[in-house]
Image (cartoon, rainbow, N blue to C red; front, side, top):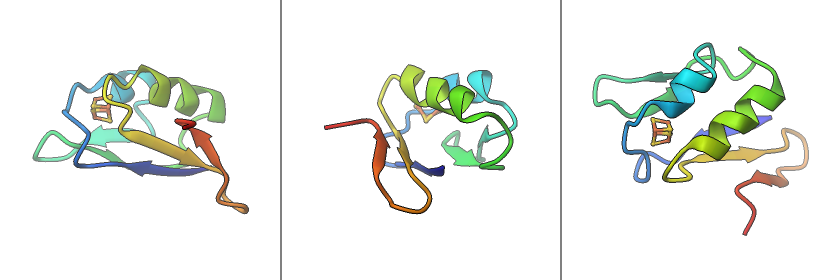
Length: 72
Ligand code: SF4
């Protein structure tokens, strides 16, 4: 799964870090970055994306690039 954090949308709430601490971390500007895209299960990563209040986490299928979350 390809994980992208939209830095313009992230407001540093850290919910994603709480949900999947091995995958996301906050950088020095308190913006979420992906530290290890394989650090947790797809299920946990999807949960992290879903609880992000600003929908800043974009998930896509690795091979096809198909959008997994958020869907339009
Ligand atoms: S939950 Fe969303 S807004 Fe909060 S740090 Fe993570 S990506 Fe940023």
